[in-house]
Length: 306
Picture 1: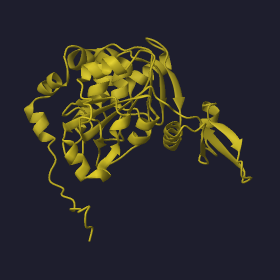
Picture 2: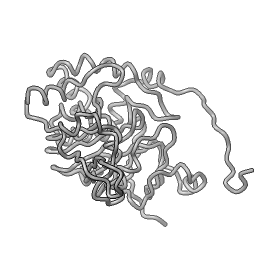
Picture 3: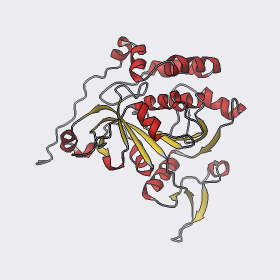
């Protein structure tokens, strides 16, 4: 029998996210663990380096909450809506404290995680030619190909202290299954020292074994499994709930004003004791409006594929 790694969100963050850590919360448009980000804010973690391909609302909220000193990223914004005011204020005015930034392309970040996961000294990339990113970021280095075919660029490995991934389901041992749009959750998890998996549902090991191709993260690298239904809201979870577009539109006005942002954090993070209270505050009607329709897929027999 595998040892259970199930923990509460409070305990997982308290035990595994430490002041000064590099923390990656990954998930590409979908499966973004807002619940974990909010718990990090609530516990007032400090001096974190936040890494993410597309810092969006959750990192804007975390930076507004004062948890971070540095951001490692590729592209940031409120997708389809606008900018991120809290991050912009920290970068442009240094208030209430400067925010160090380290920018890459999307593929540059994927390459960094991949190198970290494979324990490689760097990851080679051709796509930085005719880009100003190597000027802005001296960690992107031009090198000579060892095979004599010209110059390429290299990015260093990224090895987070903690990677946090949201998923549809896992078993108690941490074997984690995802379907729908994938980002670089697997690479970020394998690159990390510690891994927290947040899931909509805890299932028996037999469920995982019956559909092995959905398992992107094996339990052997997972430190904690947190069961947190609706934990990715306002992003979406394929098969569980849709993206809450209204939230993204509403955030645009909030993030433009520091006082409004801090009031939102008080109302939706600090004054709540966890995700269940957050869901109650959203209300049943809002939650019901995000219920997805049916989208059945084919049936696979792993014993006889014909």
